[in-house]
Amino acid sequence: MEVSYREEGVASAASSVAGRLVADGVPARLAGGDPTLWGEDAEAEAAVRLGWLTLPRSSRELLPALGELAARARAEGLTNVVLAGMGGSSLAAEVICATHDVPLTVLDTTDPGQVRRALAEDLTATVVVVAGKSGSTVETDCHLRIYERLFADAGLDPARRIVVVTDPGSPLEQRAADGGYQLVLGPPDVGGRYSALSAFGLVPAALAGADVARLLDEADEVLPLLSRDTGNPGLDLGAALGGAALAGRDKMLLEDQLSPIFGLPDWIEQLVAESTGKQGRGILPVVGADPNRSGDELVVAIESDVGDVRVDGPLGAQFLVWEYATAVAGLLLEIDPFDQPNVAESKENTAALLALPDLPTGAPAFVDGPVEVYGAAATAKDLPGLFGELLHAVPGDGYLAIMAYLDRLAAFDAPMPDGADFEQMTDAWMMADPLTLRTLLALRTDRPVTFGWGPRFLHSTGQYHKGGPQNGVFLQITGAVTEDVTVPGRPYTLGRLQLAQALGDLGALETRGRPAVRLHLTDRAAGVARLLEAAQEA
Image (tube, rainbow, N blue to C red; front, side, top):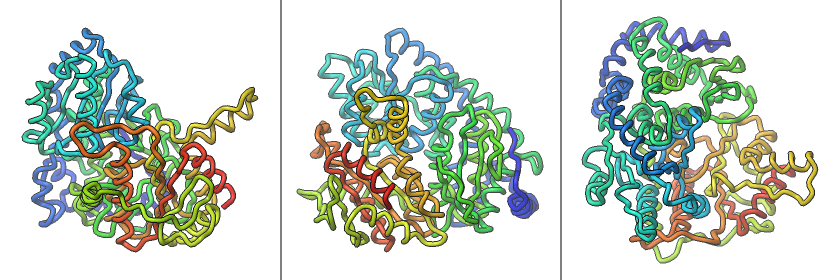
């Protein structure tokens, strides 16, 4: 595992802070699990959140049970592995399975269309991993209820097809006991976003067929380096991230186009944004964007020479080194990298909205074809004008965040014209990329433009949006639901929950006085087409 600096300014900033960290004995203290590193206010939280440092070895105790679990699933023909989990309970497993080229369906959404597509898979071949540390995450609770009913209605025993991963003492542990489900307990001294090498990352990956023992081997090889003052990739990366942020380069662009690891920036985004975005400070990860070189960007490349910092190493080592580096960056920024004080705000807003007879959507400021526009920040009369206004409103040190509460896997699907030639097919595929909207808007500004799927991002960059520097401008997208999904035992459907989550988060953003608008697609396909068209006209 190696971290190298490819830009003189980064090397200088990193060297300066690294010397201070070494003088304070930070490498050995962090590797030894010293909870006092982040100050008195953070000590209590850190004392119960440093178990990730030993996971490369302690998680080996799981390997026999994981082998038996995977063997039993294969023997029973359970080849369709579905993971119901949010944030740290799903992102690592998604990266592991994509990198190891084994199939995994991740349900980290309340979008009815995306859930319905998962439910349509062969139920007789399905095993569902329900993962959550707290055991009370609303999305995961909904998915569990839906699959329990689906299995029962099909005459299939849910106890043979549901695996629960949670912390000891959580409500989900009790649900597993009541339902007779296979239960794997995660370590309670590991936070969700630091749990990649724990049961939360390993159980679904092992069921899907990934070589999780190899993953632990990769992490174990780098573990002895993390206590060293020199040749310590975690220290080198953490000093680069924190040193650059202190020097004003607090927008981290992640580049992985040449890497054999698939999807790692999405996992890094959650780890860094939720860990550092608080007390008006933080590092903003930007995934999949071209650098604008605006002066406050740091380009970090995974196994590529295109960045200011290059990070080389296998996936297991990457997980551990990024966790260590994030803890170091938090120390330099003088924040607690293990709490998430603003995540609960949107959840509470959502619960309050769901208790109302009707969701208070209000009246649109204007309508542009299949798109309704809501929000006090919307003073334009059409979408191109609105996009121009929002981009103009981004501060010189700020960013634009696009937040789409849509079907992550099909929202931007483009219909193929009859008899289409190669050029038309290529155009359709390009427009089907959800990041096309972000790219079109990014071309019209020198500020970073991020893209997040709701409610997935609420467990990731959502903390940064509300707790980090208050310099964001927010563009939210919701869509009409034509075929909803009932949630057994709950007084709401997935469609109602999805909209309540969007409105709850929008309310949390508006209370901070930042420009925020909601675009509602009354026809999802036509609405997406209009958004892309308007972005080109802006």
